[in-house]
Length: 496
Image 1 (cartoon, rainbow, N blue to C red):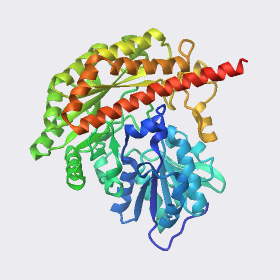
Image 2 (cartoon, rainbow, N blue to C red; image 1 turned 90 degrees about the vertical axis):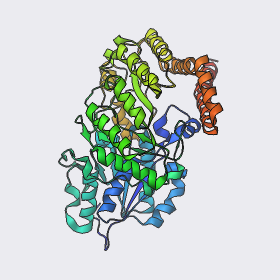
Image 3 (cartoon, rainbow, N blue to C red; image 1 turned 45 degrees about the vertical axis):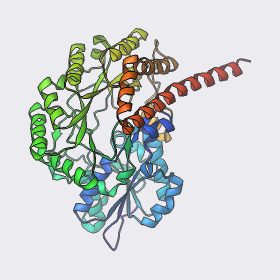
Image 4 (spheres, rainbow, N blue to C red; image 1 turned 120 degrees about the vertical axis):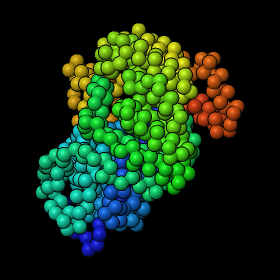
């Protein structure tokens, strides 16, 4: 593709794909009930462009429930010069479908791809000619440089932090330094999104989302370290400014803080709590944390500031598996953190992994026993999936659990089934059965059912949440049973 030239300021359209794909193995029906969240990455990019007086719009196909085939006329009517897409690994087929639609509707439009999956497989992504450029790493400065180049300010095809298709060849340009000062970026342009369309099963509407940091210093074996190990923080003042804007502009009742670990940096967390309280900002929020990065006084301060719920990753059910997973935590820390959160009155949710390398049935049973012993309000169970750029993926390849570089082929092929980690001791069917067992064991305990019934009796909102949760649980269980029946039917048919 040659240089893009426009007689006016270039127009950008960001398109968000249907995130149902990201929530596998839930069915589409269950995923829709579970929640649809604002796209912070695209809203932040849009805010940067708008701050520099470039026209920009966001089209969230998921929130608006618009099929890609029906969006072509909307894209054509918007007449963008640039379309920006973001991609997580499981969303790759959906993003590819959108890019093809855009190129069919507007062949001269520059299609730019970014996001975690793109940062790992930029060259493979650009093997499809519906993409012109890929942004690697943080996108704010890079995308602004792309628009400036189109506007006449530089070479479009040699911008640091990009991978481009130039003269029929895919070229990776010089990397861009990691942005240290996150306060340099404006607040995400949530006003460009259909905020009334977002919902979450366990969060009251209206709600919003934000992040206060980027990066992660830990090296859990199942987690991708895509952008940076270096932790970068937004200032407490800017974060609370944004929270206040969310309340004033959208009337939000709760803010979902999506930091990987909000509680890292104890002094910063305590300062945040003080700032919220001093300003008299009355809004609930929920956070993600590690069990080794909380203590009772911090949790008390968070509760006073408005924290309603804390989500903590546990993953393994024994110290042996926690060590294999490289979690860097102990079972004592797990029990202590959840107990402290319960004591101060915070709602709690734990995350667990079913299966792993060197895991057997007894290890999955340990996960189930631990989850039911922690007195949590909610638990989520995921079958171990060797995602790209993880130790788990490397081990899966080394041991032959995956026969090829699966995700590279997945990208070049435009998608494929999600590969759960099948080992000598745990096959895919057994893993899914254990996931169903874990959900049933956790949520059908009398104390959990009584707790849900108590909350449901207090308000219509709580009743709706409980009924939605029952529906999602039914989808998980019934879906697995149907799959098992179909598998048996196929096996029976083929054996005749």
